[in-house]
Length: 111
Image 1 (cartoon, rainbow, N blue to C red):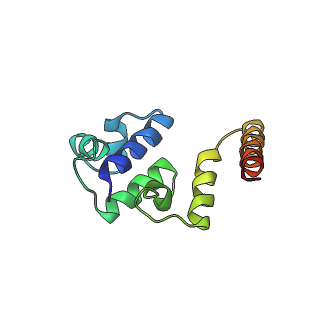
Image 2: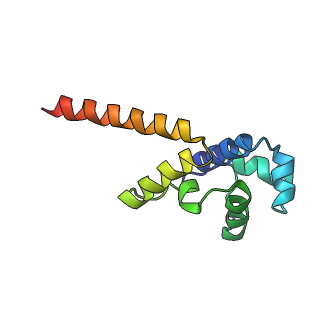
């Protein structure tokens, strides 16, 4: 388990919600010192804490652990969904257009 990557992802999601470490820690009933150590990858967390954390951040456990879980199509699709969740329709359509462009470039490159 890469706790530094997990901590980084937690921090990114916390900042996305404009929460301080203290606010997030209080909302999931842990100390802000412990929250800081989790974000820095210095401490592990219990399953119970992880579940409270993902529920508060509005993400899934598989998204948070995606660096530690082997990739398969379902996990990758879930990661895409996490990235675009909450984005306006216009941005979602733009992201799809970018992906199509990238994949068409790969298709041309393999020929």
